[in-house]
Image (tube, rainbow, N blue to C red; front, top):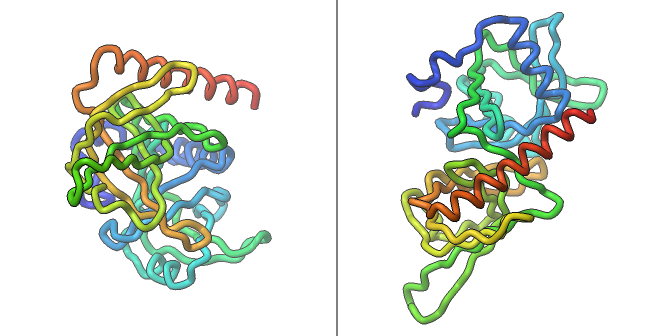
Length: 252
């Protein structure tokens, strides 16, 4: 997919109504939702949040990174994609980014989007997993020099869906984690549900520059023919997370 181009099956999920767009972006700001920002044909990615929606000037202000060189590349880009993947999928593209100074410091300024994607299909419904006590995925890694030596890579989940999981890895990235590679016997101990043993296939690896300039990677993996028992564990865990999220939203 070319960055910022809506896929054919996304067309019916495009929101054009200005009031609805403002409401969606304002909700992102209120809940401090993390967005993936990609530019330079997807080679540069960082994380941000919506600070505020300036309806008077038809603008949106977003958190800016600390790396000045990175910020310069971002501001020079003419095609920047903003994406929220967990839960309801929200996506839009912007250009002509600039820096403004707000009362709390500098921020990125973009024009209020004229349209965006809002997609809540079940297979895309990713739910963020806890950060305080992260769920770990144990991935058996091959050792080409000595097959008898067993190595296990432990990475924390950042989100889960009925179709796969998202993991976070620090730099340097393990060389075996590349698109299309499958790993058998991966273990995930879903809290209050049980241990799942899964075959996982790497779908994408996205580099992310953190606010402090550190490099991390988000790794998207798909379940490969999970057993009925493992599917049940995944369903119960996602259900528990959904129920918890709804309870928190109700209390706010």
